[in-house]
Length: 361
Image 1 (tube, rainbow, N blue to C red):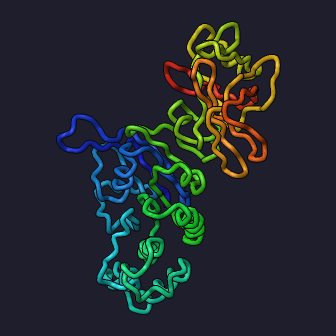
Image 2 (cartoon, rainbow, N blue to C red):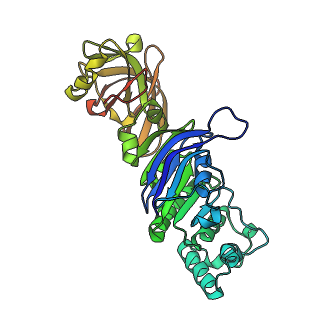
Image 3 (cartoon, rainbow, N blue to C red):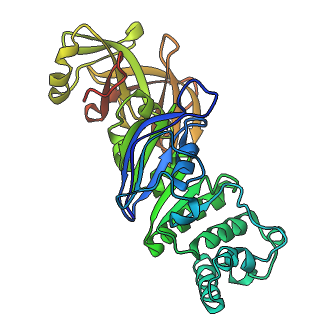
């Protein structure tokens, strides 16, 4: 099912400002769309508006072109999985999964077939006659997913369903959810504050901040071409290094005189209107190249080393105390308080207008 949000806004009674406003989204049928953003940015509010749990103050919500603003949640052909699982503690796993179908007075053999089919996919058949309190958090999460699956919804809504799980189980469940999405052949809309979940699971990401869409697109686009400084600082682990400075004679001069960079021709052409103006330069930690060269280089002191196995993160300081993070292979030898030289991979530079915060190149 195609889900469209046209100029959607939400304002709660008694509040002066809109929580979210001017949201325009087009989620294609069978997309796995992740709504991402920091706490309080409005992502759960947006999901609840799609579900019909929150009213829409302005704009239109369309399912396959049909306006859904006033349609009851039960009539929207959706299923929602909550962060808290929301299982009935006195019911078995089987009865929890079958509950919505029983309420719809579905035939017994259909209920049984759907519950067993979902249990098979989610690998919880052996727990069907256990109570929620008798199974683990990961298994309870699968039951919550199974309860939504049996309804065979056209739109699958998930509100931070993995946030209560430990790191190893979250990693496993990310893979399972992608497989589940493929097998269900539905449209999935997933809310999270975890960029790793978004980058690894989504076919489309919507990044929100303060109720405003910052960027929409494929995960690779967010990493390789962030639309503004907020996106650059939110996506990536570690986040992008950002240096502030000024363009002079076609060369970027970082504040504090810590380095200068002469951009490649493609970027220089786009930066020509910014001569004498404030600009921010961004570079990912892996786009530094070890070794000294005549220009486009930096000299830093290694302050902290975070060893991650295949790679190590060097937290470095410039002479004026400014910091940056550089990623190097784990087998290279570095030591704290050593001075090292690196230069920029010019193809990995991102330039932003300091005034508007928008991407230039």
